[in-house]
Image (tube, rainbow, N blue to C red; front, top):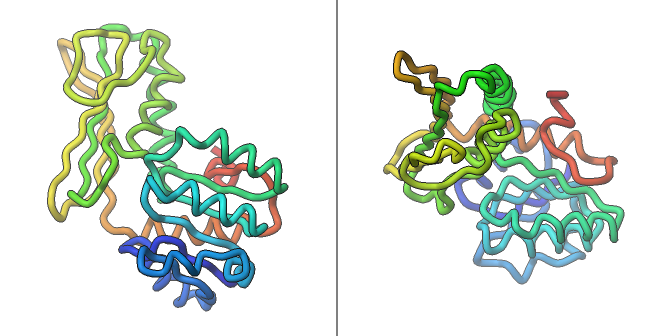
Length: 239
């Protein structure tokens, strides 16, 4: 498999290392230093592009891949207000776009566990729900895309909760608070908590390294070749 890596930071380099160990070819590496090389001609040397860049660059990178006719797998967060435009581009070019806020298999199991727990908590109004996430200081968006995905999983299954809000916890019981910390050299951590006057229920995921994300991204890149449409981890995992 021939891969174009768009976004050559820590995540891009982790993906590159794992891809090379699997015998894949990296035919294009795009960073802030060589954006002029992100051309249709160069992209078309690859079977698939993997995009982990910055929120302000993600849409243009994805657009370039779709216009070049190359399937693109993206894990960049913080740009999703432009997702409807991506859907239009996929339809226009009969293209392939795979997105996940988190490619870790463990996190996607955690997503499913979160939805199931929320369904169970729907009838128990004495419990208030909250989400807390911790990332390294280089993480640009807060809340993280993973925390927002977790929040949506809660909102879809607890009728009394109508929206989520970033920042401190609120006395409004229809609002799901999502709080964030940015700490040097810390693993990504996400905690879902349900609290009543008599007890607390908590589930947590802690990422020990970037390897889990890279592994999932490469799995998606291999799986997506030959497929069409807007796809995600649930299409691979079945949950």
